[in-house]
Structures are given as C-alpha cells and as structure tokens.
Length: 264
Length: 326
Ligand SMILES: Nc1ncnc2c1ncn2[C@@H]1O[C@H](COP(=O)(O)OP(=O)(O)OP(=O)(O)O)[C@@H](O)[C@H]1O
Ligand SMILES: [Mg+2]
Image (cartoon, rainbow over all chains, first blue to last red; front, side, top):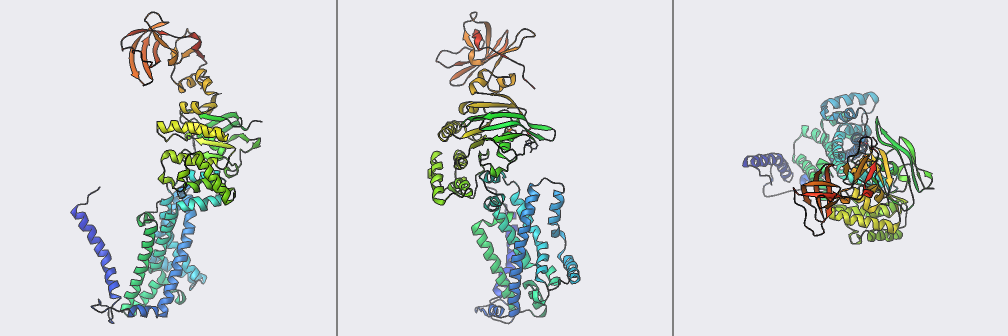
C-alpha cells in the first residue's frame, strides 16, 4: 500500500477545504431568514427557496437550462460514439487530425466563440433560436464526450463483436446488444460531463442567448449585476444538490472513478 | 461432395503471403487440426473460413455452397475464440442463449437448449454467473457451449486450450473430443501444440510459412513426416549421416535402444542424462554425431554419464526424407 507523507496529506486536505468551503458557505447562506447575504444563526428559513420557486424568470431559465443541457449532451454523445469508434478502430489517413479537430474546441476561449457565434447567428437570423443555441453548446461540450469515449474504446476487445456476428447478429444488433453495453460507463460518464458543462456554461451563452432562451447561469449573472440577495445562494444550493445527487447515483451504479476515466 | 472444401485459398498482406494456395477437403464429422509454428497462417486460414478475413484468392465451399465472400453473420458457424470472447455483461446462460435469440427460437425452447448445452460442458450449476466469476477452464467451456448450442454445421476452434495449465488442458482435450463425438460436429482446430493436435484429431494439417506441408493422420505425420521440417516440428529426431549424394536418414529417439558396448550398431558415450518421470532422456556422442535416446523408466538402473554403451535399432524404423521444401 502506498504511503502518503504528512506533507502530501496536508496539501490534499487544503485543496479539499479550499474547494468545498465556498460551496458549504453558499449552501448555509441559502437558509438565512435575513435579507442580506449572511450566515443563518439559530433560526433557519426556507423563504429564499420559496422565492426562487415563485420567481417565473428563474423557473423558466432553470427549465431552459435543463432542457438545453439534456438535449445538447445527448446530441454530443450521439455524435461522439461513432466518431470515437472511427478514431479508435479505423485505419485511415488523417486519423490524428480528426481526433485533434474533435478536441480543438477545448482550447478556443468561450469568449471568442461567443462573439464569433453572435455575429454568425445575426447573419443567418438565428438569434433567439433554441436549436442554434443547442448546436453552439454541442460544439463546446463534444470534446468532453470524445475524451471519455476514446479512452473507453481504446483496448476494446473486438473479438467479442466477432463472436456476436458469428452467432448470427446483424451489425445493428451487435452494436446495441454488445458494443454499447460494454462502453456504457464511457457513454454515461461522457453524457454527464457534457450535461454539467452545458448547464454551467456562462461565458459563451451570455452572447448568444435571447430573452426567450436565457439559461440559468445567464439569468443569475443578470440578476446578480442588479442586486445581491440570498436568493442567489438558494439557486446555487439547488444546483449543488442536483449535481451531487447525479454524482451519487452514478457512483452507486458504476463507481464514479470509473465513469470519469471512462473505462469499463 | 466433400463437406468443406478449401480451394487454393490465399491471403496476401502487401507482399507477404500469410496463406498461400491452401487446399483441403474435410468430410462430415471429421476433427481436423491445423498445426504449425507461430506466424504460419493458421489463424488467418480459420478467420477466412469464419468470414472475418477476406480471401485474396481461392474459394471456400461448405456443403457445396460457395461462402468465400458471404458475410460472417450469414455463415452460421460455431466459433471458439482464443480469448474466449464471452459477453462480459451477460450471464453464462445469457451468453449461451444469444445465438438462439438471433435465430428467434422460442423462449421455452431456448431455455431447454441452453440447459442441455450447459449440461454437456458440466456447467449447468453456473448458469447465473457472470464470466468474470469463472475460471479459465470454465470460461472455455462456456465459449464451447455457446458455439455448440446453435448446432453449427462446422465448429472452428482457435487455440482453444492455450491459456490453460497442463493438467486442465489434458482434461479439456479429452472432453473436447468426447463432446465432438457425441454431437458429431465437423471441427477444425488451430493449435501449435503437436501433442494436442495428435490426441484429438482424425487428421492433421501441418502448415509452414502459409503453405500446407502435409495432411495425414497423426500416426502418419509422426511416423512418416513428409519433410525434414515436419520431422523436427512434431517431435525429436536423430539425423544419421549418409554417404554424399544419398538422402538424409532420420530415426526417432524412442526407436533407439541402449545395449552393451560393442553389441549395437554403433558405440556411444553418455554425455548427459535427464529424468522425465516416465522416461530417461539421454544425450550421447558417437561416430554418427550426437544422438538423443529416450528409454522407458521400467525400473532398470539408468546409465551414468561417461559410460560407453552400444546403440541398437531396427532398420525398418529408419526414415528417409526429402530435403525440407522451402
Ligand atoms: N492484419 C494483418 N496485416 C498484416 N499482416 C498480417 C495480418 N494478420 C496476420 N498477418 C501476418 O500473416 C502471417 C500469419 O499470421 P497468423 O495470425 O495467421 O499466424 P498463426 O499461424 O495464427 O500464428 P500464431 O500461432 O502465432 O497465432 C504472420 O506473418 C502475420 O504477421
Ligand atoms: Mg494464431
């Protein structure tokens, strides 16, 4: 068993504390009965949560974001599965180039993308279109799905697929009954990462959302520029709860460490 | 009409002939082994029959039907892969039942046949386990059951026993042959282990560098190898020098006997001696060069190194071989 030195342990503990402390504080503040951002003392209150649920703009944006993140994550994974398959199995020229192309959005700043897409959308009259907003999200989140799926498919034993074919399966049946179940952790993990990245995306979305398609982060940003009250903390606490629940479920089903590395 | 016919089957990778003009006819119910050193084209031959490698030239006919270019999933052959290739996310029963589902066999009938196949390989108690919960030998048998349950006309086995330890391997060879005879499925097995090929097959196809060198019964291959190469590949052999211009002469180590010095055909000195349990294995030096001799361990005292002994043999056991073809 590897042994950690005291220094490494302290360092890890500090990293965890610095990462978790703001989240804990935000979640605590969400329960304050006061009108200002303050830690609740002895009395706790759900009034700010109630306010969120009765705030039509926040609720619309929340639904927008959920819908946007689910559809774009699904489309990304649907694109990434065949692409990752071609890249890990195909023997064709330009494989490396294709892989680089799929991963390249990772290194383009979202700010730049936002400005560029804003111009493109106003050119083609796509501003305010949910569909084009979703495509923009697909563009920036697909690399995450690609990364996980490529690592899930590298070293995949293809004789298992041959076995399915030899038993009379069609190519489609083989894919559904054998290939897909075997890369499922990669697919789920990829979808989850895509979902979180889309749900959380602010920088690019600020430029390309229209009043009808405003996402939750953009709504929060707009709200926060005008007033800071504990409702922001309540929204944040809800997002934390949502993410944590998803992670917990995944951990129960597959083991989170496996999912995030994308391996079987 | 032969059951299976390979007609000048050839596979070329660039300039390399992985398989070159392999011709073979197999009768129904036969057990055939493809035997040869690593890289001689055994797997490639099998994969062409299975449909996972496209033949460059030649034809494959199964029961008179040309299947050379038929897709793998239309051939209906049973295949046991070297790596077993079990579906890791399905139970043993799920694995075995997959092929029947593809054939749209009814659920009740499926359950019956899966149960029968698992009983055949002595795994009926393991139906609900996952492959990762099984030993190598058990996985092997699941793979066999999965291939047999679809009642294929032809069973293809690619080094099915190579991952097993010696004891289990022997047991499985016996079982494989038993099952094959019970079911009567025509079988082609790839192996690079001559003992395995000999113990289970009706006929052995010896391959070298992509070509077929000899097709014969195990006894004939061992006793009358067609080439120098085969003689060495399927066991040990002693080369006896002959007069210039005459063909090479060979004799197997177990055909030599140790007798009193002076009363054999040649005298030799014991250089080394190894104990193999059921046999003694000797290295001798003689006027004929180095000789290897195996003597059954029948309880008599072995010869000590340095002893001078006589070596005797029946001339009838001496083989004359053509020089090994390239
Ligand atoms: N996809 C391929 N591309 C190029 N060459 C190949 C390919 N597959 C096999 N070969 C070559 O063809 C020859 C025969 O290979 P094959 O796998 O049939 O050998 P084998 O007899 O099964 O050997 P082993 O006992 O090691 O499994 C080898 O020289 C191998 O390098
Ligand atoms: Mg091989």
